[in-house]
Image 1 (cartoon, rainbow, N blue to C red):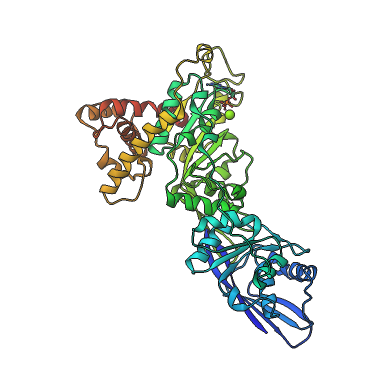
Image 2: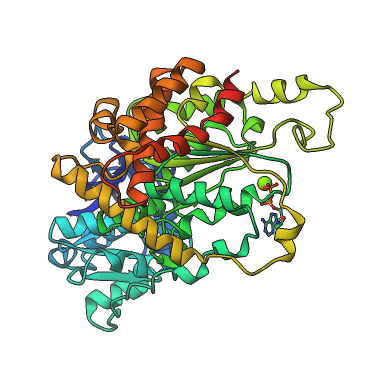
Amino acid sequence: MFSRITTVAFQGIDAVPVDVQVQIGPGSVQFSIVGLPSKAVAESRERVRSALLSSGLALPAKRVTINLAPADLPKEGSHYDLPIALGLMSAMGLIPPEELAEYVVIGELSLDGRICPVNGALPAAISANGMGKGLICPSQCGSEAAWAGNDIAVLAAGNLIELSNHFKGNQVLAAPRPSAPVSRKSLPDLSEIRGQESAKRTLEIAAAGGHNLLMVGPPGSGKSMLAKRLPSLLPPLEPKELLEVSMIASIAGELKEGQLSDIRPFRSPHHSASMPALVGGGISAKPGEVSLAHNGVLFLDELPEFNPQVLDSLRQPIESGEATIVRANHRVSYPSQVQIIAAMNPCRCGYAGEPGHTCRRGDRCSADYQARVSGPFLDRIDLQIDVPAVAAQDLIDTTHNEPSAVVAERVRAARKRQKARFKALGLSILTNAQAGAQLIESIAEPDAEGKKLLYAVAEKKGFSARGYHRILKVARTLADLEDCESVHRNHLAEALSYRQGAELLMA
Ligand SMILES: Nc1ncnc2c1ncn2[C@@H]1O[C@H](COP(=O)(O)OP(=O)(O)O)[C@@H](O)[C@H]1O
Ligand SMILES: [Mg+2]
């Protein structure tokens, strides 16, 4: 008695087909799983045996061998229980094999025969659709899998008996529906922030050009509040981006009730986060925060409090847009195109530079604190600003507060201009922040007045090659926000002002 079932193994966000081959034959009574199973997969034996027993099906007293092919591909996770159980049921003649051949199967079993939810239902469903098959998955994963397309047949079952009845024709399982997407109304709005006009302006520039931003200011000045409002300014995810973001969330088990959303991700890991938590890894090579923030925002609040080594491990994924996790016998990578927003107090006591405040440790207080963030990390941040305490008048006066929707419209227009410009050059990048050195020099050539200003500043202060390109990038975004094709003196002057914090920090 032989049968085969298709399931998948996750490699990064790809779900690659795996063949579950089941053989029930003569020999000593035994149940073995071969084909590079991880510990969780090897333990599946006990769960499958019990679940079948609880569903009124005893395994025949024969030799049972399960092979997971291809044998050299590592198999991790607990979603192999259900394909193994269905393979056994098919080999025992309880489910017609030709019907099962139409499906990819994923699901974990509990000892009483219930099918428990697993991560990765969306990529599994997309992969199944690509193979021209349907998906059999746990009932809780149905609404997530249904997003893979209108034409995909999804069987979302609560237990083994339901599935067996479905194939016998006694009980038909209804096709699950995709759950409603998350509404943008749930986002916090920029209008809730009083005053802080220049910080809001910088946030708009960061949103428009995809620039990394560092805010330095005393506690309670609204830095965290500002950062949390960035997703409401960013344009919705494009369909391809949405798919990538949702697949990563699905594999990490972060898609709440199968709800997809076109809101850009916003992740704010705590400063005590470990390297695997940020970059990815751990027992089952899960995506880290930098990948969960893919196509969105990674907010590093209280930047100097992060472990410097952990922070530096973020540099590679940020630069390459891909986080690679090396395992004993293979490597996995997850996309990680993120916009970094960081916030910090100017010193450990929090109030250095505030009028009327002197740190007990004098200038050392802020110097020591700021030195905890490495130069190369700061070098990747285009916009660096001071956020002073909110002025009392601003707290009282509630008249002028622009809502997010109005700012988002300006951001959308500026992004459209960038996209069109890059498209005309045959490039697939979307924002000025992503442009390389040569490219930015060609698209942000300052006019004569602008060049004069740059010469004057260079003579007085000088700037590094990186610093120079950063100024051009920000100036390009400022011109785009004004719908201005050339970069003028005023754009450069404003861009230069966002580097002052940087010069102080780097000194
Ligand atoms: N500009 C502001 N407008 C309205 N409320 C503010 C403002 N700044 C701070 N607050 C209030 O102060 C609290 C602390 O702000 P927060 O963003 O956490 O400050 P920070 O991160 O700079 O320490 C907020 O929850 C909010 O109630
Ligand atoms: Mg804060």
